[in-house]
Amino acid sequence: MPPMNTAWPWSSQACAISDTKIAFALLALVLFIYLPFDPASASVIQAGADIQTAIDSANAGDTIVVGPGEKSSFEVDRPLTIEGQGGPIISAALQKPAIKVNSYGVTIIGFRIIGVGKDESAKFNYYMQNPAAAAGVRFDEPNSAIVVRGDGFSLKNCSIFGAQLAISAENVRDLLMQNTTIEGCDIGASILESSRLKVAACRITSCKKYGLDIERSRDVVLDNNSIVNNTNGGILLKETNGGIVQDNILSMNTFGLSLWNASYNQVRRNRADHNYYGILVTSWSNYNNITENVAEDNSRSEIVKGFGIGISLQENSSNNLLKGNTAKGNFNGLELSRGCKFNAVYDNNASDNKHGIRLNENRNNLIFGNSFFRNDINAYENTSLNIWNTTTTGNYYNDYQGKDENNDGIGDQPYSLPGPESRSFDYRPLIRPDQEAALNGTQIRDEVKKYAVYGPADDEYPTISKQKGVMVISRRTPSTPPKWSDSRAFDASAPPFQKENDF
Image (cartoon, rainbow, N blue to C red; front, side):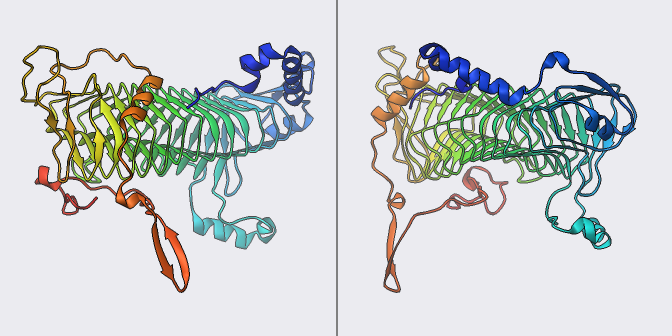
């Protein structure tokens, strides 16, 4: 796999060095698109209660300053900076956002926005009583606090409360959310079919569905956010590629972070705790790097008593790298389930979990150089065929009972992986935890190619049948949403559906 490059095209060495004229031409084009005005001629305008009047009188590039107090909603149709001072308040109305952005190059700073929640009966009554307003308007549009339909948008130092949808952005390029709080909404932000997005130092909490719902987008950076107590999911990246998710707190959500059919993303240095799933990678999410995250105490007893997953790969997610993560105090610290293959699990520490690592219905994953200690069951495999060591190293298991007669740090007897139908062994179990991670990502993936040589499982072959004279070729499809159970054999208090054969 070629190395990922998340830099913008005009900042690459190829553009800057190989052809200087092209680089200057691109820069000129960008300035032409985003700065079709002279910044030196920009004015500062003091707005009253009616911000719209100030907008209508402003020129491109002007700054409109808004003082404290309650203000009317507004729509921006030209590139402006609108800065609230003293926390001015804007309230959305039914099917009328507080702020609507239809221009490129708009910056909104320092507003408090009160949204409108979901109320289908109120929406219906409104349109029945206002037939002119209902003409050509969809009834299924959410009540949004901010609607963005322009490129180069920035939202800074704002707060949004109580909206059905706090921020709606679609087909937007270059979007920044910074130091903004979203609380008590159905969905915090819905960002669709967009590119070059950054959400930094924001707090998103107590949303009924998702904190951040980002779909069919690319080049997303989510950095240093606090995503807490969202009923369904903290962050959903669906069909979204080439992103960076780093240094976030993901706590008390159903899932902290979910990659759904999302590939080539970097997920690093996040903390996921008290979720049902800390980090979930599912539905053909491939070539993601999941590194240096801490997944601790993930358990949501109100959903299933005592059940919670630290980091989970499932549903045909393949060629991913799990490296340098810590999983502690979960039901399953690390897990791979259902059709995952060619994943590398290296240099992770899993301790004080029910299962340190659990694999089910997978093959050709390489698990080596990890440390498993103080788990009820350190490593477990069911209906799988994976590789647990290379020629140089296996994994450390604190319950290993073998000897090391030649003192080379490798156990003389193999470690048998427990689990029904398990045929796997770690032939080079470590006597002491591996203290140094010596391999980089490229080397680890090369190891996978070298050792992952098992053929496909029987259920990976397509099923061919003849129906009414027509040949039909079908493959197994993943469950949607994912359905999870786990080993009743190891937990007498588990709910009835948690049986060994429920996978």
